[in-house]
Length: 147
Length: 147
DNA sequence: CGTAAGCCTTCCAACAGTGTGAAGGTCAAG
DNA sequence: CTTGACCTTCACACTGTTGGAAGGCTTACG
Image (cartoon, rainbow over all chains, first blue to last red; front, side, top):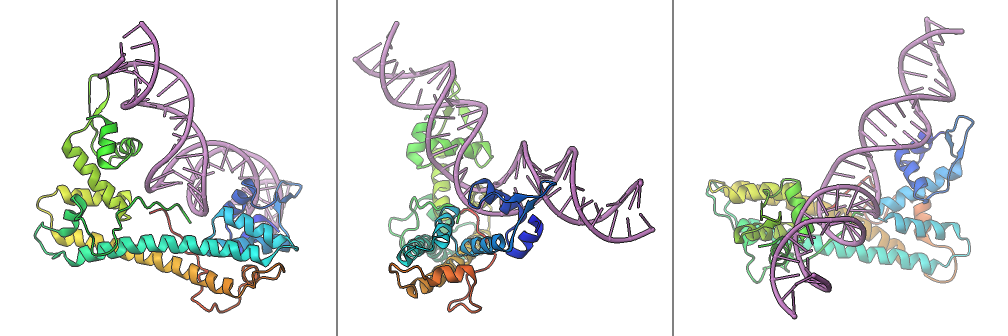
């Protein structure tokens, strides 16, 4: 199977398959005489696994560990569970940060007349935040990388 | 004021100040004889504005628009409000995606014994998703860039 | 057999937003 | 004058994905 067919079958783009190979997430694919990468059903199976882990928000690093456990027949399910729950905690942390921002901004927007006049509490708040936000202050050094 | 002092006073790192200047988010700073960037209290005020907008999750593009409105004395507050609410909607959309992932994964983790045996519903699900997730399927092509 | 479409290959660049580090100039205090 | 703390620019890293260009391969059709 060519990379295009594997991409279609797995839902992972050809570009990403090559990228995953490059960073060592997946083993190097075998090559045809012409140098084309060749994939088996097994490979497609693995790519689909990766695709789903990605869809659940796992970063490549996490997917790497999941793949290791997946392949390891003597794994302990406790390790998988720990990995999953750590990721859930990470997701929840990010959710809380976003929620803080959203509610703060929503409160400010509610207080804005939204008319043709220039005065607006949103800009005022950005200019000089009032000490106590009605909602937990979203103004923090919260940083979040890509998923 | 040097860039270091402006950074300390505004909460925006010197690196980021230079970056913001480079991409045109802020005007080019004046220079001293030695070529050092010089900042006024006004500039620091603007940097603080940027810092807070960033803390509320606005992307540089959005901050650009906010700055324009901030400086525009004849702005209509309706425009500010529209911008803010559009961002809130964006945040909520991302929250929903993350929440979907978290709850799906949490449900799977709950079903995992978490012992020394290898069988684990988390891996099973990644291998071949059961048609209907208990929670809305988090498995989608959901993509989200940086904040 | 020739050729054109549609694959495949590699390499290079871009995105957001931030950080790291190197090589060198400058400023202030001792 | 030296030292250390600053400033300058430049280049590169990260994450994950996409886009394109230049060239080779395959396949199907005439």
